[in-house]
Image (cartoon, rainbow, N blue to C red; front, side, top):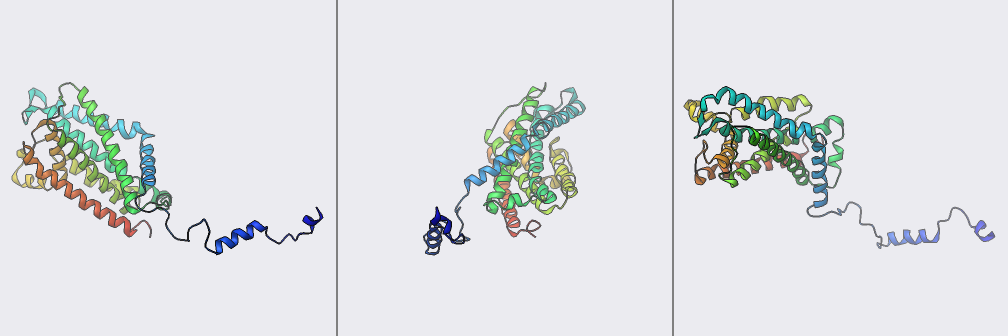
Length: 300
């Protein structure tokens, strides 16, 4: 007891001195400062971000999944009552069957945009953007997590809308070319998810994002041949419709269900559009990655 009491309180214990000496000699268990510990592809971080985004919109699934299905079904009811009377047929099928694939695709694209345009913008508005920038995720992983979650929401909305269409009398849901349904459905969701991601980087308030939705996304969706075939239009407006990327997404998706569309009635005729939308999405993805990596309006 006396020896312990007489020991000066300012001296460090022997084991602490040994640990300090070990760290100075280079035998420390800790890596050098600034050396990254997660190299390659951060699968755990990407999966965590993806699940976080999924849970965010599933917490309010009545608003994010089922409400769009009801809204789209109302579109179908209104247009079939107004334009589908008298057994009207388009592309050889009843009007309700013709318009259903376009409405499904439109719902998928609009909700993909809404989901991806929300995360970064909300973080910027609330000052919580650091929660997305601080984790050990590269720009590519951050972008992939948000876009993949937006595409997942689009697929869920598409399933809910398809179920509503299938239950509606007078509408036949069939799959003539499943590859076209899968490809154009995913490409349409990806295109709008990337567009929403870019919009969330650019926007500084919710009004900016709403402006893109109301003046770009909604008009391009409604004027893309969702409710009509472009052969009924004048040559000038047909050319405008063919310059609209939404037109190819919706027509290709419709081809998967009906085997007929504005861009052709054979696999070879639609294949060019399928390759084109894939190249477009690749270009948009590279653009979004470069903008995110630059830190424009995020890190400045």
